[in-house]
Length: 81
Image (cartoon, rainbow, N blue to C red; front, side, top):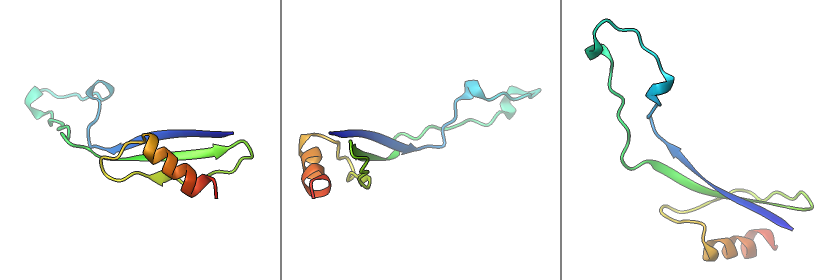
């Protein structure tokens, strides 16, 4: 049996303003936080077998999602051998 999961990792400077508290006398002193429009991201696929064999992570190419063709390629090239 093979269990797999994929995850998108992103990099952004954005912070949740509800988690941060500032004390200022003048509201104009608060620095704005900009959110990136097109985040730098990478999708990673990882598998583990019922015999506890862990495959090295598969990093997808830019704009590539884990669909049937990518998953079958990883199965035949990484897991089966």
